[in-house]
Image 1 (cartoon, rainbow, N blue to C red):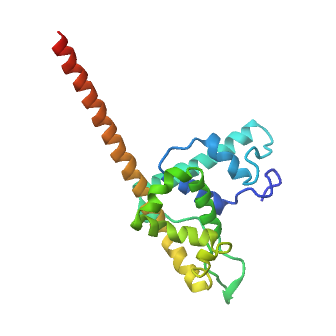
Image 2 (cartoon, rainbow, N blue to C red; image 1 turned 90 degrees about the horizontal axis):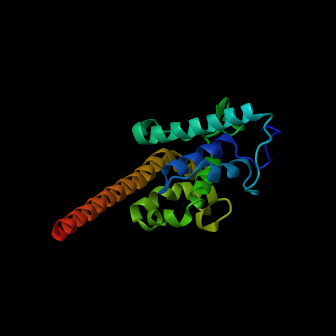
Length: 206
């Protein structure tokens, strides 16, 4: 909401989804790559007009702390994970608020996915995992893409998708975490095998 950032700067809901995708994906992504899009989707060179270096460092520290908090919750306390969703201003009955729409969070999440489109493809090609990311896609793109429009064309359908978001995010995080761990184990095994082969070769030469 600050005048110090471009008009299309992510709000906190979108940022929360964006960071959730970044910590959940197949590869580690450095802040220098993902940070510009936080300030402006339309201009990758955009940045906030910080008053001074102290303010810039403070804001960056807060963003990184939030990222670490999301990663820690997804990895260590998954049942406590909750997307940060704004509630609509309009009221449904008396003082009761309407349920959150979740679109901004999901748009942020898919923006994080887009940073590594090709690397995320195995998840989309896996039937079960494809189901996990579907509610995120539907809420992110339903207002523009006819493929998803029928899934958000009434409040009950949208609310049902929103309810799926916490579990979907946890399952996606685990999917990539398990793949990265398996890849690391294979890599260590390959290095050990290569080292053993080299040792035996040296022994034969001697």
